[in-house]
Image (tube, rainbow, N blue to C red; front, side):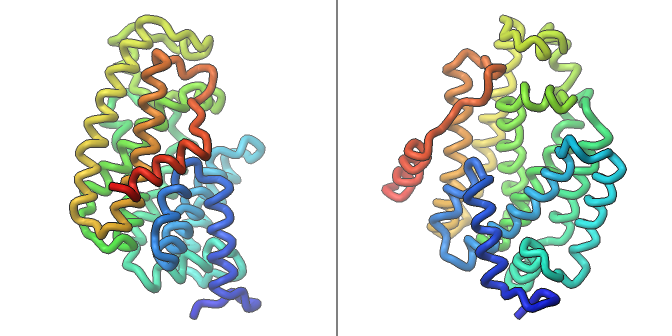
Length: 281
Protein backbone atom coordinates (compact mmCIF):
# COMPACT_ATOMS: atom_id res chain seq x y z
CA UNK A 1 0.00 0.00 0.00
CA UNK A 2 1.25 3.49 -0.85
CA UNK A 3 1.32 5.85 2.12
CA UNK A 4 2.15 9.53 2.30
CA UNK A 5 5.25 10.60 4.18
CA UNK A 6 3.28 11.15 7.39
CA UNK A 7 0.86 8.30 6.90
CA UNK A 8 -1.96 9.54 4.61
CA UNK A 9 -3.88 6.45 3.62
CA UNK A 10 -4.86 5.61 0.09
CA UNK A 11 -8.51 5.63 1.15
CA UNK A 12 -8.16 9.23 2.37
CA UNK A 13 -6.44 10.23 -0.86
CA UNK A 14 -9.13 8.65 -3.02
CA UNK A 15 -11.86 10.31 -0.97
CA UNK A 16 -10.24 13.67 -1.68
CA UNK A 17 -9.91 13.17 -5.45
CA UNK A 18 -13.51 11.95 -5.62
CA UNK A 19 -14.66 15.09 -3.78
CA UNK A 20 -12.67 17.19 -6.24
CA UNK A 21 -14.21 15.40 -9.20
CA UNK A 22 -17.75 15.89 -7.91
CA UNK A 23 -17.05 19.58 -7.25
CA UNK A 24 -15.12 20.53 -10.39
CA UNK A 25 -15.98 18.14 -13.21
CA UNK A 26 -18.78 19.45 -15.40
CA UNK A 27 -19.53 16.13 -17.07
CA UNK A 28 -16.87 13.66 -16.00
CA UNK A 29 -18.37 12.97 -12.58
CA UNK A 30 -21.70 11.89 -14.07
CA UNK A 31 -20.01 9.29 -16.23
CA UNK A 32 -17.75 7.71 -13.64
CA UNK A 33 -20.53 7.37 -11.07
CA UNK A 34 -21.63 4.16 -12.84
CA UNK A 35 -18.23 2.47 -12.52
CA UNK A 36 -17.25 -0.05 -9.85
CA UNK A 37 -15.56 1.74 -6.93
CA UNK A 38 -11.92 0.83 -7.74
CA UNK A 39 -12.25 2.01 -11.34
CA UNK A 40 -14.17 5.12 -10.31
CA UNK A 41 -11.43 6.05 -7.86
CA UNK A 42 -8.67 5.50 -10.42
CA UNK A 43 -10.43 7.65 -13.02
CA UNK A 44 -10.98 10.36 -10.38
CA UNK A 45 -7.23 10.33 -9.66
CA UNK A 46 -6.46 10.84 -13.36
CA UNK A 47 -9.03 13.65 -13.52
CA UNK A 48 -7.48 15.31 -10.44
CA UNK A 49 -4.04 15.28 -12.09
CA UNK A 50 -5.44 16.77 -15.31
CA UNK A 51 -7.36 19.36 -13.26
CA UNK A 52 -4.18 20.36 -11.41
CA UNK A 53 -2.38 20.89 -14.71
CA UNK A 54 -5.24 23.05 -16.04
CA UNK A 55 -5.48 25.09 -12.84
CA UNK A 56 -1.78 25.91 -12.92
CA UNK A 57 -1.78 26.81 -16.63
CA UNK A 58 -4.89 29.01 -16.29
CA UNK A 59 -4.11 30.74 -12.97
CA UNK A 60 -4.24 34.50 -13.68
CA UNK A 61 -2.32 35.28 -10.48
CA UNK A 62 0.79 33.28 -11.33
CA UNK A 63 3.57 34.67 -13.55
CA UNK A 64 4.50 32.50 -16.52
CA UNK A 65 7.82 31.36 -15.03
CA UNK A 66 6.11 30.18 -11.85
CA UNK A 67 3.57 28.29 -13.93
CA UNK A 68 6.34 26.56 -15.87
CA UNK A 69 8.13 25.63 -12.65
CA UNK A 70 4.98 24.15 -11.13
CA UNK A 71 4.15 22.20 -14.26
CA UNK A 72 7.66 20.78 -14.36
CA UNK A 73 7.24 19.80 -10.69
CA UNK A 74 4.11 17.91 -11.67
CA UNK A 75 6.02 16.11 -14.40
CA UNK A 76 8.77 15.20 -11.92
CA UNK A 77 6.21 14.00 -9.37
CA UNK A 78 5.32 11.12 -11.68
CA UNK A 79 8.70 9.55 -10.87
CA UNK A 80 8.79 10.47 -7.17
CA UNK A 81 7.33 9.27 -3.85
CA UNK A 82 3.92 11.00 -3.62
CA UNK A 83 4.37 12.49 -0.12
CA UNK A 84 1.29 14.07 1.45
CA UNK A 85 -0.41 15.34 -1.71
CA UNK A 86 -3.73 13.46 -1.90
CA UNK A 87 -3.86 13.68 -5.68
CA UNK A 88 -0.38 12.20 -6.06
CA UNK A 89 -1.02 9.48 -3.47
CA UNK A 90 -4.22 8.43 -5.25
CA UNK A 91 -2.61 8.58 -8.69
CA UNK A 92 0.38 6.51 -7.57
CA UNK A 93 -1.93 3.83 -6.20
CA UNK A 94 -4.01 3.84 -9.39
CA UNK A 95 -0.82 3.42 -11.42
CA UNK A 96 0.13 0.44 -9.24
CA UNK A 97 -3.16 -1.30 -10.05
CA UNK A 98 -3.66 -0.29 -13.68
CA UNK A 99 -1.19 0.13 -16.54
CA UNK A 100 -1.80 3.87 -16.85
CA UNK A 101 0.80 5.10 -19.37
CA UNK A 102 3.17 7.60 -17.80
CA UNK A 103 3.64 9.12 -21.26
CA UNK A 104 -0.03 10.09 -21.33
CA UNK A 105 0.25 11.89 -17.98
CA UNK A 106 3.40 13.66 -19.17
CA UNK A 107 1.53 14.68 -22.34
CA UNK A 108 -0.99 16.51 -20.13
CA UNK A 109 1.88 18.52 -18.65
CA UNK A 110 3.16 19.26 -22.16
CA UNK A 111 -0.29 20.55 -23.04
CA UNK A 112 -0.22 22.88 -20.05
CA UNK A 113 3.21 24.15 -21.06
CA UNK A 114 1.98 24.67 -24.61
CA UNK A 115 -0.83 26.86 -23.28
CA UNK A 116 1.81 29.15 -21.81
CA UNK A 117 3.71 29.48 -25.08
CA UNK A 118 1.00 29.31 -27.75
CA UNK A 119 -2.14 31.42 -27.90
CA UNK A 120 -3.02 30.95 -31.58
CA UNK A 121 -3.08 27.97 -33.97
CA UNK A 122 -2.58 28.57 -37.67
CA UNK A 123 -3.99 25.26 -38.92
CA UNK A 124 -6.30 22.52 -37.75
CA UNK A 125 -3.37 20.09 -37.81
CA UNK A 126 -1.67 22.24 -35.17
CA UNK A 127 -4.85 22.41 -33.10
CA UNK A 128 -5.32 18.65 -33.35
CA UNK A 129 -1.80 18.17 -32.01
CA UNK A 130 -2.67 20.32 -29.01
CA UNK A 131 -5.93 18.43 -28.46
CA UNK A 132 -4.01 15.14 -28.42
CA UNK A 133 -1.95 16.48 -25.52
CA UNK A 134 -4.70 17.94 -23.34
CA UNK A 135 -7.60 15.58 -24.08
CA UNK A 136 -6.54 12.65 -26.21
CA UNK A 137 -4.03 11.88 -23.47
CA UNK A 138 -6.83 11.69 -20.91
CA UNK A 139 -8.53 9.02 -23.00
CA UNK A 140 -5.27 7.10 -23.34
CA UNK A 141 -4.58 7.35 -19.59
CA UNK A 142 -8.06 6.14 -18.67
CA UNK A 143 -8.25 3.26 -21.13
CA UNK A 144 -6.30 0.68 -19.05
CA UNK A 145 -8.66 1.38 -16.14
CA UNK A 146 -11.56 0.47 -18.40
CA UNK A 147 -9.68 -2.70 -19.36
CA UNK A 148 -9.24 -2.11 -23.09
CA UNK A 149 -6.43 -1.25 -25.51
CA UNK A 150 -7.98 0.63 -28.44
CA UNK A 151 -5.79 3.64 -27.77
CA UNK A 152 -6.40 5.24 -31.17
CA UNK A 153 -10.15 5.55 -30.65
CA UNK A 154 -9.69 6.61 -27.01
CA UNK A 155 -7.49 9.43 -28.27
CA UNK A 156 -9.99 10.34 -31.01
CA UNK A 157 -12.82 10.51 -28.49
CA UNK A 158 -10.77 12.78 -26.27
CA UNK A 159 -10.06 15.06 -29.23
CA UNK A 160 -13.78 15.17 -30.06
CA UNK A 161 -14.68 16.30 -26.55
CA UNK A 162 -11.95 18.94 -26.56
CA UNK A 163 -13.15 20.31 -29.90
CA UNK A 164 -16.62 20.69 -28.40
CA UNK A 165 -15.07 22.44 -25.38
CA UNK A 166 -13.25 24.85 -27.67
CA UNK A 167 -16.48 25.87 -29.38
CA UNK A 168 -18.30 26.13 -26.05
CA UNK A 169 -15.57 28.22 -24.40
CA UNK A 170 -14.69 30.74 -27.13
CA UNK A 171 -15.52 33.71 -24.89
CA UNK A 172 -13.76 32.31 -21.82
CA UNK A 173 -10.66 31.48 -23.83
CA UNK A 174 -10.64 34.98 -25.34
CA UNK A 175 -10.58 36.40 -21.80
CA UNK A 176 -7.43 34.34 -21.20
CA UNK A 177 -5.85 35.72 -24.37
CA UNK A 178 -6.30 32.52 -26.36
CA UNK A 179 -7.98 31.69 -29.66
CA UNK A 180 -7.84 27.97 -30.29
CA UNK A 181 -9.89 27.88 -33.50
CA UNK A 182 -7.49 27.73 -36.47
CA UNK A 183 -6.58 31.11 -37.91
CA UNK A 184 -6.67 29.98 -41.53
CA UNK A 185 -10.19 28.59 -41.09
CA UNK A 186 -11.50 31.70 -39.37
CA UNK A 187 -9.99 33.80 -42.14
CA UNK A 188 -11.52 31.65 -44.86
CA UNK A 189 -15.00 32.14 -43.37
CA UNK A 190 -14.47 35.86 -42.78
CA UNK A 191 -14.50 35.68 -38.96
CA UNK A 192 -12.27 38.30 -37.34
CA UNK A 193 -10.79 38.50 -33.87
CA UNK A 194 -12.72 41.75 -33.48
CA UNK A 195 -15.90 39.68 -33.86
CA UNK A 196 -14.72 37.31 -31.13
CA UNK A 197 -13.74 40.17 -28.83
CA UNK A 198 -17.11 41.87 -29.31
CA UNK A 199 -19.02 38.60 -29.02
CA UNK A 200 -20.73 39.04 -32.37
CA UNK A 201 -22.54 35.95 -33.68
CA UNK A 202 -22.35 37.13 -37.29
CA UNK A 203 -23.50 35.10 -40.28
CA UNK A 204 -19.83 34.35 -40.96
CA UNK A 205 -19.38 33.09 -37.40
CA UNK A 206 -22.49 30.90 -37.61
CA UNK A 207 -21.28 29.37 -40.87
CA UNK A 208 -17.88 28.63 -39.43
CA UNK A 209 -19.28 27.27 -36.15
CA UNK A 210 -21.55 24.93 -38.10
CA UNK A 211 -18.52 23.67 -40.01
CA UNK A 212 -16.62 23.11 -36.78
CA UNK A 213 -19.61 21.39 -35.17
CA UNK A 214 -19.84 18.95 -38.07
CA UNK A 215 -16.19 18.09 -37.52
CA UNK A 216 -16.86 17.57 -33.81
CA UNK A 217 -19.62 15.10 -34.68
CA UNK A 218 -17.37 13.20 -37.08
CA UNK A 219 -14.66 12.80 -34.44
CA UNK A 220 -17.29 11.86 -31.86
CA UNK A 221 -18.77 9.16 -34.10
CA UNK A 222 -15.35 7.60 -34.70
CA UNK A 223 -14.30 7.85 -31.07
CA UNK A 224 -17.51 6.26 -29.83
CA UNK A 225 -16.62 3.08 -31.68
CA UNK A 226 -14.47 2.54 -28.60
CA UNK A 227 -17.62 1.41 -26.79
CA UNK A 228 -17.60 -1.80 -28.85
CA UNK A 229 -14.56 -3.10 -26.93
CA UNK A 230 -15.52 -1.97 -23.41
CA UNK A 231 -17.34 -3.95 -20.75
CA UNK A 232 -20.90 -2.82 -20.07
CA UNK A 233 -20.22 -0.50 -17.14
CA UNK A 234 -17.16 1.07 -18.73
CA UNK A 235 -19.11 1.58 -21.96
CA UNK A 236 -21.92 3.18 -19.95
CA UNK A 237 -19.41 5.50 -18.28
CA UNK A 238 -17.76 6.62 -21.52
CA UNK A 239 -21.07 6.77 -23.38
CA UNK A 240 -22.58 8.93 -20.66
CA UNK A 241 -20.04 11.71 -20.67
CA UNK A 242 -19.84 11.60 -24.47
CA UNK A 243 -23.62 12.02 -24.60
CA UNK A 244 -23.38 14.97 -22.20
CA UNK A 245 -20.94 16.65 -24.57
CA UNK A 246 -23.17 15.81 -27.53
CA UNK A 247 -26.10 17.44 -25.71
CA UNK A 248 -23.98 20.54 -25.13
CA UNK A 249 -23.17 20.68 -28.85
CA UNK A 250 -26.84 20.20 -29.73
CA UNK A 251 -27.81 23.13 -27.51
CA UNK A 252 -25.10 25.36 -28.97
CA UNK A 253 -26.41 24.56 -32.44
CA UNK A 254 -30.03 25.12 -31.40
CA UNK A 255 -29.00 28.55 -30.10
CA UNK A 256 -27.64 29.54 -33.48
CA UNK A 257 -24.02 29.04 -32.32
CA UNK A 258 -24.18 32.17 -30.17
CA UNK A 259 -21.72 31.03 -27.50
CA UNK A 260 -20.66 34.52 -26.46
CA UNK A 261 -23.12 34.93 -23.62
CA UNK A 262 -21.74 31.89 -21.84
CA UNK A 263 -21.91 28.14 -22.37
CA UNK A 264 -25.27 26.32 -22.39
CA UNK A 265 -26.25 25.06 -18.96
CA UNK A 266 -27.09 21.41 -18.42
CA UNK A 267 -28.86 21.06 -15.10
CA UNK A 268 -28.05 18.25 -12.70
CA UNK A 269 -31.47 16.81 -13.52
CA UNK A 270 -30.71 16.83 -17.26
CA UNK A 271 -27.40 15.10 -16.63
CA UNK A 272 -29.00 12.45 -14.43
CA UNK A 273 -31.61 11.89 -17.15
CA UNK A 274 -28.83 11.09 -19.60
CA UNK A 275 -27.26 8.68 -17.09
CA UNK A 276 -30.64 7.02 -16.64
CA UNK A 277 -31.17 6.67 -20.38
CA UNK A 278 -27.83 4.90 -20.60
CA UNK A 279 -28.79 2.51 -17.83
CA UNK A 280 -32.01 1.62 -19.65
CA UNK A 281 -30.28 0.87 -22.96
